[in-house]
Length: 211
Image: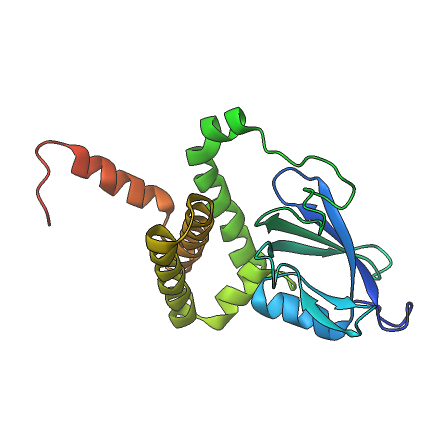
């Protein structure tokens, strides 16, 4: 991705948008180092103009911003980052830095949650085909099979830790991370999440026998 960092003395604005609700969450600034770390880690990282250093959003509060997609505008000097927030974004405790409420439609989500797993894999498959720069999913595919499998294991371990010593909210968060990385791994192997669902449905049959 070509980004013009020269226009604002090494910085570009980065607008953070909720990947699900499309609500604008906050505005920060990135230099080349902050952008590189964001792509590398999958967590939104800014350049603090007051402290003159890098800071990853949520590094102390835990309310990180998990990157879904990074887009550059037509002038190549403003980023739009679609992310999944782990909690309130503003330091005041508000959902957004403008004091707005950022709530997902719970009824709609419950009705379509399982169908969304298929939609998510469709999206990940498109990433696999196009491999756009600036995408965390692209970086996983580039890292290779071993790294993708390792990430599934890491996220599974984090889920276990939250289940035994954490909170329900964090358990949901880590479980979602594990599912996402599992779908990435399945995509790399030419498999679909529906195959897992079919296997579970088959096991539900009273006549099913373990392979």
